[in-house]
Image 1 (cartoon, rainbow, N blue to C red):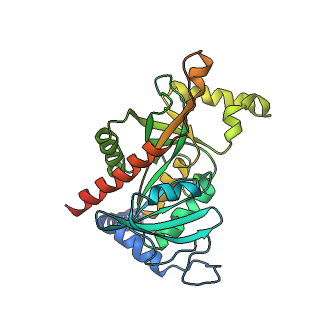
Image 2 (image 1 turned 30 degrees about the vertical axis):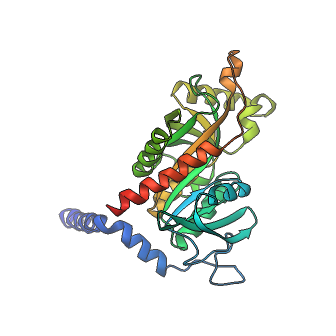
Image 3 (image 1 turned 90 degrees about the vertical axis):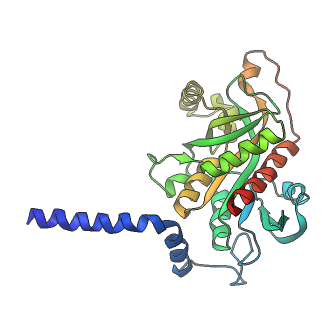
Length: 293
């Protein structure tokens, strides 16, 4: 009896393993047939982002700020506003003859994961998050670019996709594309793990919070582990992308570094996100070229 049970489990494992090679396409096909509640007045459009099939490209840049979409769309050929609903603004155009899009996500993991879910259902499968961050290591300077290879899951959204033991890791192809873009543009950059949180002021004023002791202790732990910077979306996006079997990566402008300020080091505040945007756009070009090989 025990032998038959083991044999049955082995056969189930072999069946699962054989499907692994085609898992990406199997996942897309399954999503086509699964029933997702769509509360949109227009059944052809996604409820929150208000775009549908054919409205977006395979490649999508994800800023947080809706106003940043206009800046990014200026790099596209024939850019067209596709939707403007809540925090979600979408433009679609072309880079090197390939349809691409930009969709704003607002602040934080919940709204970012909504955007990714609905963009995937609209046909997108490659995402480059571009935004801002605060440096955590003293060699990460204001105005530098941080490229996330992974993210600390100190937020809540990703827990509704995967157990906390599962790592939030960026897609290596997107990381390589971002790295190549930063090198080409001769921009100072850093690659590594970022810390992702839900509370902006939990980072900047932890002593004012009832759980400040925990926030301070964890901040020191992340620093000692080598976290480069702190931001609010990457962990949710990386985990959501993994569950959806799509590609995602992130790059950020370092606005300032509170650790440098604590040590009395130079710490100018930089607000111009143009270089981070240029890195993201060039990274999409790199991905297009690699995918066409």
